[in-house]
Length: 173
Image (cartoon, rainbow, N blue to C red; front, side, top):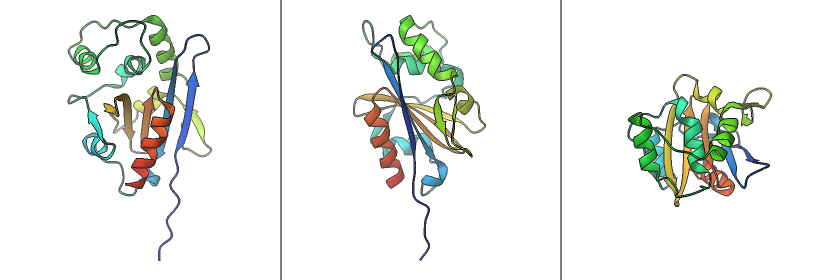
């Protein structure tokens, strides 16, 4: 009988001190996934989620995608409309409080990323790696951003419990 290393994931939730908003990040190392890192379409099936993007999402879109996860200050923007605006290079309207917090999250070394030793990395540093795939999904009505890199999967959401629940679902499959 072969002993397998236990599965593991790392999570963090960051709160805005001035506005009622937060983002949660869960990183699942590739070694915790039984069959490696699947494509986004397979991840969506495993998570019982709808993959909202059919076209490639670029790393420089991440701050606006994170901002779209946050609670709105007016009429909420539909994810499919946002993706259309991004992929067709149309202007995007976003409240500055949402965008400011999301930009901080994208560029600060706050995401727990497995290295030796465990340390924080910025989302943009993770997304700049070779072999990155970025997807926007809806799981249980909540939008999530998935970033896959050869070292693992990063789940980004505004609902803290959702990220850890999805991580456990991926590790178990």
